[in-house]
Picture 1 (spheres, rainbow, N blue to C red):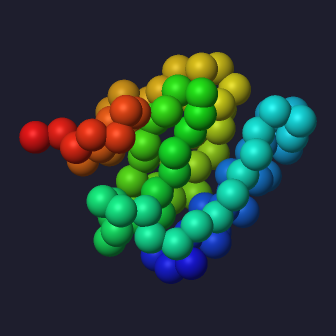
Picture 2: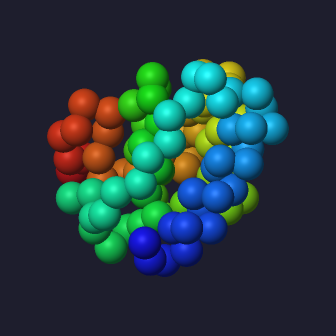
Length: 90
């Protein structure tokens, strides 16, 4: 994992535990997520289906608090290259 992805993964795991979401959240790692290669770290949150690119540790924790725990995607942080249904934005 590159571009600080391991630190983001760890921050998200810590935030999931802090929010008491361990039984509800499954966290996985992957390699490049096309068409978002080069824009990582990338986080896709479900059930919202929101895609976040260029995530750092602080944003990762924010995604857990707002999107995963509260069901509110963080609009200003959403990827402009892809939306929840998987089609690219123009």
